[in-house]
Image (cartoon, rainbow, N blue to C red):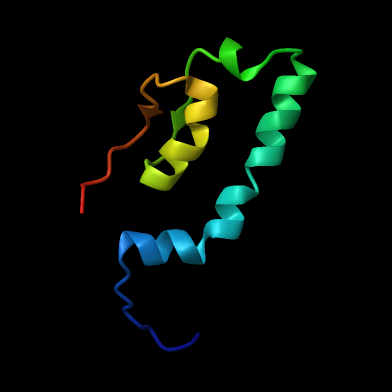
Length: 77
């Protein structure tokens, strides 16, 4: 099964390690908008499972400054 290890990461380190994963959602978002024949300005809200500052900045183009609706709130670090 393997050895359990506890690793503490800063938010910046976590975001850097997961950058490829976070980038992988951009194409499906763009495809969904194209399939629906709408643009970023037509998006009323985005619902997210967790909020990361880097993702909030990335999705700002879709929300035009509207607050993202969070399924769960994470404590600020």
